[in-house]
Structure formats: structure tokens, C-alpha cells
Length: 203
Length: 225
Image 1 (cartoon, helix red, strand yellow):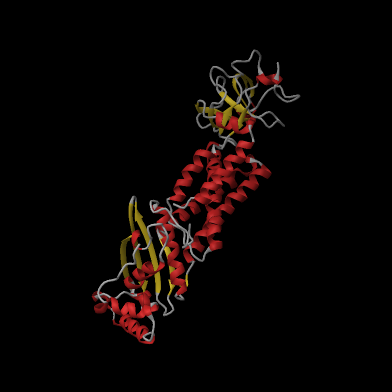
Image 2: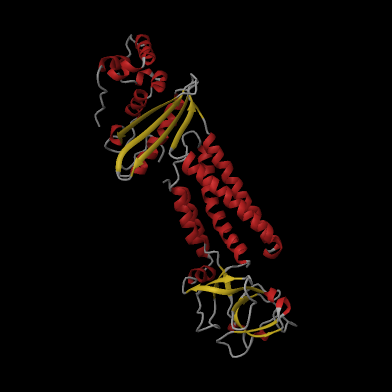
């Protein structure tokens, strides 16, 4: 089975919507004290920009802490989970076992040892219970299970390989980040535009 | 945008306000007021400290991974949002609309808040003067921007400064030539009157501006736009 069948996904700290919100918040703010404060005005503009970025980042980290997942929002990059999830779907993950254990039938996102790209597939077999339960996953749209995708010598997953179960999703929204990662120049453009609006605007 | 000789669009309220806001420190500092940057400095300190927290969190996370830094990240996120809230409060409440704070040569503290209402081309200033006995005097004025922008959108300093000097006795005392005498003023503040008289007698020989002030009498005369 070729590796193109794995439903790989991508972390997306969807900064764009957050920042525009924070943007507005900061622009509603009072006019900065100006006049002779040239360096101060520059420092203040830079600060606004820094706050936009850092607030987005810290919201992302806050979500990570709450969900206990290193990457609580991910984007589906392939079709191996169709028809449940399509390319471009935005998934929200939850990685705490408050009420019950992660079990067969759940769609989970896992990371294969020494591989960067997380994969979203469904748990189809479970042996044992607790932290050491042996888990097997499979993409709904794939012919065979995921043993081929695991690392060399890894025949099953355990709980700590999983970075979250899918708790909710928004279709299509993730195409923005797919576009951003396929055309990296867009990232630079977006960051530049964000910086410009923060620095140029004054009310 | 802030340059007084630059033209602004008369239809852009934010440009009009920004230009007028910038004219305040220029004018008052030229009268030897000592501008206080306390509010800005506190905001910058709060902001950059808050940013530093997120920067450190980013580096930790990048270096050690999420699993090993979970507790620290949780603490950092909490601290970050506490400080971010303080910063937002500082900007929205303490600093709201403040465009100038400073100390007059004679020791009084002056704080100026400017405001405009959406789509209303009127400049609202609230000037709070705290005298040496910590007593607060509040002066307000609301004037249309047309009083100090000409029809091409150029800022004209003299009428703007006249308004300020006439409204706030403290400014009038520092810049008597810009005070346009009205009956209210004559009644209200003898010390300003003294300053005006002193200025006029000093400049009596051949100074046209002083003569103008003296000649105006009742009402301030606007320049032709």
C-alpha cells in the first residue's frame, strides 16, 4: 500500500481569524501618545504587532493545555477517511480520557514514532486496557489496516502515540492552510500584510 | 500624517483628529511644558513583558516539546492572559484618549484627552489641570475641525493654539499672545489678564500681534479660510 493513502494532517494555529480579532481590539484602543515620542511610537507599533502574534500563539497553547494535545486543531490533507472526513476539513481534537478510555470506533490522530506528520484514522482493534492497550488503526477509505504505516518494528499503537480523538470538525475551512503550505510564498505575503495593517492603521 | 504642513483629507475624521492630536504636544512642548511619557512607558513595559512570556514559552516548546513542558506552558498561558488583561485595561481605561500629559513650567500637571464621535467633525478636548495643591480643574472644548483646518486640508496652528490658550488659563499664562480676550476670561482669571497685559506692554512698540490681541476685544477673529 502506498503511503499516499495515509490521511496526513497538519497543525493549523489558524492565526488569520484570531489576529484580525485582536487587530480590531487594539485598533479600538486610544490614540497613542505622540509628538516627540518618535521612538516610543515605533516601539508601540511594533508592540501591537508582537501582541497580535503572541496572543494568537498563546491562545493556541492554551487550547493545547485544555485539550492536553500538542496540536488541538488539525487539517485533513488526504482522502483516506472519506466519506467521514474530506481533504480540507478542520478537526478539533480532545486528548483527555475523563469518562472512558479511547476505544474501537473512535477517530484518532496519532503520530508514528520518528515521523513528523500526524495521521487521522479510526481505531479498529483494541487488545488490553489502560495505557498499555494495543491499538490498531485503519483509514475508512483504505483497503488494509495501518501496520504498513507504522515505524519499522512497530506493530501497534499505544495510548501515548495518540495526540487526540476527533471531537468536532468544520468542513472546507482547512483549505486555507493547505494553500498556505503548498504555496509557501503566501505565508510571507500574509505575515507582511498583517504587519502592515497593524503598523499603518491608526484608529 | 502627523506633519503639520502636510495636507489631510477633510473628509477623514481620523486624519483630522490625528493631526490635531499631534499638534498638542508640539505646541505645549514649545511652551517649555515637560511632556510625561509615563502612560506610554507603562504600556510598553507591560506589552513587552507580556510578549517576552510568550517568547519564552515558544522557545521552551520548540526545544523540549509539548509533553515535557506541559505544566510550565499551563502556567505561562495563565500569566500571559493575566498580563494581557492588565494591558488591555490600561489601554482602554487608564489611557483612554489621552494625547498629552506634562508639567507646566510653573509646576502644574496637565492631562489632555481628545475624542471624536463617529461622523461628527467636532474635536472634543477635556483638559485636566492639577495645580500644586493637587486640586483638579477641568476644562472642555468642542470645536469643529474647520476652525483650524483650511479648505485645502492644511493644519493652521494659530487658531488652534488660540483656542487652547483661551480655554486653558494655564496655557494662556504661558503663551499670552495667543489668548483672545473675552469677557468670561476677564472675569475669571486675573493672573492670565496680568500676563496678557504684561505681554502687551512689553511688545507694545511695533508688535503687530500684540496690538491685534489688544484690538480684538470681545470675540476671537477667525482667519479667512
